[in-house]
Image (cartoon, rainbow, N blue to C red; front, side):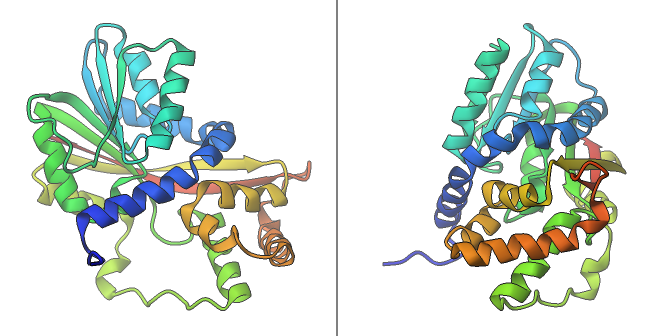
Length: 286
């Protein structure tokens, strides 16, 4: 008997499968990702007011960020617990922690909302680009607030709404729809036209956080060529991996060609591609 599409266990299993399938791609492209993203991680740690000796929770850590940056900040007297649904991602994160000599971080395969931290309270919690992909972000924030000590802070980063958030993903989705005859996304409801700043501040407030604030941050991803952009999407995105991974070579080459044309405005003088992105960091006090 098949499980209903809204069954939590089935949903978690599918998410785990999807992210396991691209874990190797994240390891491959990690320098590219972190060259652009480390500034966001540093800002998140600053907003969370992370100090030596603290206990920090990182939710949806992937292959280890910003957990490892936080582990370096809290030092040997502190502790970081990093969770993710993907065991393949966590295996890579553990290897990275060993390479960096960080013994104060624990990696746990766990759901963001259902993790068993009843007896563990954290001075701060972090989630970089994971909250909006959760089935119920509001319930996730309610649970995260319960994990914090009184006055503890939660900081998240999400992509700004609209094409300025992630231009390459937006352009690639348009090319894919045209090339493969995919349906256009459903029109947005009027209530969803709010910016990510507004959505996050409302979400934090409804979940019971105080001193809520949000701010935009610009970051850029840099690639050596337009062809690398297509490879990157297939390697790190479960959606594009599923869509393009089984396409004939000719179709994939045509996708790369069309995407390259769309990325011309971002071309650099040395033949590379530099794509600006816009993220929003939000913080609240539990």
